[in-house]
Each structure stands twice: as structure tokens, then as C-alpha cells.
Image (tube, rainbow, N blue to C red; front, side, top):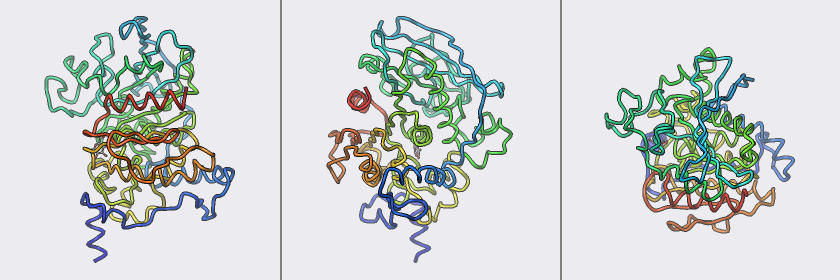
Length: 409
Ligand code: GTR
């Protein structure tokens, strides 16, 4: 019977809430050494060991490399977005590994705003797909054919017709700069193309394959986000101390891991990051550890696969990664049409992390249950459950801009 229920849990997506919590969740106030955490000091002393448990069991360990890198500002437009912004295109080159693709950043800085905070995040289909502007560099790197439209992507390479194809809703640059924020994005495939062999051309492969089984594409993308922040720290037009890392879905998982490891990120926004993101792994609802590892064997560490039908033995769960963001502000959003990402699991993950925010005297959510659709809740810790599909859209961005204006600026 136990075997049968394990099999069900791991391979099938359950949508019955009454069956969703078969296992207990680790207590966020119990340290890795088993001792109770009562003070900030005790929590911070535990932080490193906890982060390492995530590295060891879920994402893999990011190698500590002091890479030599340099930044090239390729193109600057001083009158972008109807005169509202300066557009820069910057490439991050890795001097020790010239065979690595540079990370090509598209950056907009609002005009007339002193030291603007900045949103940083990766995109799925290239910078050029986000806005129809022929001046934007079009990636030559491998790309998933999400749209199955050979006029846009052929043989896994972007074609001219893919300019602007993602639509402006996912990265509404003009709205963002109008609200007084800078924004930087890069194509995730510049860092690592999203397929099982993608590691060969990414840092994971180039550093000699020795780390390939210990960190996954999520780790590589998170590493790349920190390299974008390295550039931002050198740009005098931006306040790099106010960098908000944001991501949708798989890129929300990567942003989550980046924010947990790299405390230079001042805040984190999860847009439907789901399994392996903010959603609790030990819940049986929507996508499971086994499903994600089978469909995307290159995303996480090899060790994570050990938990495929054994998730009960996972020593940690994702609310503890939320706690590792504390005391920094966090916004988590789910969507009604995206049950696959387990909206309740995403909400509960914040709730279970709140005791750590309380240690820092940060305001927590007044609500103990997920709110109805389109009613954002919270302040420093914020959450919404949007109507509609799995997507990052204008509604989401409007909430993120309000959040950032209130907690970051
Ligand atoms: C799905 C995957 C999710 C999420 C999503 C996306 O297929 O199961 O975990 O990452 O892709 O990135 O859009």
C-alpha cells in the first residue's frame, strides 16, 4: 500500500486538496543542527548550512570561481521608449573562457530619475523577442521552439520574424521606466541553452565537466543573474543596492535560487515559479519532483532525482528557501489557470517562512488563507492569485511596480 501511494504521489499530478499534504514539512525554526532558533543570531549562524542543504539536495553547488570578466557597452540609444529611457546593450565576457557565450544584457534606464532601483531577470526567447526594435541584438544561441512556428524559430535558432514575438506584456519596458525603475534582462540561453545537452556550451561544461553532475541549469542561470548584477554595480546610472530579481516559471525558480545565494539582490519576485520554485515540494498537488526531474533532467542536481518517489525523505522544503530570502522583501504570485504550479503550495510556502521574517520584525501577512483572485495582500511580504493563465502579464507587473515603489524606493 505504501508503495502504491508513493507511486501515485510521485508520478501523477493530484488536484484534490484533501490529499495534498501526506507528509510533514520541516519546521523553519529548527536549525540544521536540530536546535531551536530563537534569535536572529542563531538563524544567521544556521543560514550557510541550510543554503548548503539546498545546494546538496536540490540545485547543486555553484562552483566558487573568481572568473575574470569584462563588460562591453555595445550600443546606447538616448531616446528609447518614446523618449522616456536610455537603452544600453551590454555584453558580459568571460576572459578565462573565451568559448563561452557572453551574456547580452538589454537595459533601460528611466530619464530624469536619480539612482533608480532596477528589476533584473532572464527571458525565454531572447532580448529581441520582447520589443520590436531592429537595434536590439538577436541571439544566435540555441532556443526552445515554444511556438512551433518555423517562421519565427527554425532549427532552434531565432529568425528575424521573432522580433517582438513574445509581446510587450511579459517585460513592459515603457511602463517600468515610467514608474521610475530601470530594467535589465538577458536571454537564459546565453548562459545555458535549455535542453539536456545545453550544459556542454555553458559554464557547467566549459569548466571541464567536473561539476556537471553537481549543479544544474537552474544553478547556471542563477549564476548568470549574479553576473548581470556585477555589471549593474559598475553602472553609475543605477542604484545597484536596490536590485529586484524577478522571474517567471522556470526562470522564477532560477531567480529564487539566485536571490537565496546572492544577498546583493535586495528583493525577489516569483511569478508562478511552482515546483522547484516557491511551491512546497512535499505537497502532492500539480507538478511533482518526479515529474519535473523526468521532463527536465538537466535543471536540478543529480541528487534531487533520488527524491523522485521518495520526497518524504527530502531534508528540507521550499519555505526554508523563502526564509533564506529574509529579511528582504518578497512577492509571490500564482494564477488560477496555473494549478500545475500549485498556488496553495506557493502561498503556504510564504506562510511557513514567516517566523523568520518575524525574527527581523518584518510585517507578515495578516491572512492565513490564500486570497480570492485579483486581490493582492500584504506589504513587505506580498502575494496575489491572478485570474488567467500561466504567464507574466501586465496585471502582474502593475502589482510588482506598486510593491517596489513601496518597499524598495
Ligand atoms: C513547465 C514546467 C514548470 C515550469 C514551466 C515554465 O513545463 O513543468 O515547472 O517551469 O514549464 O517554465 O513555463
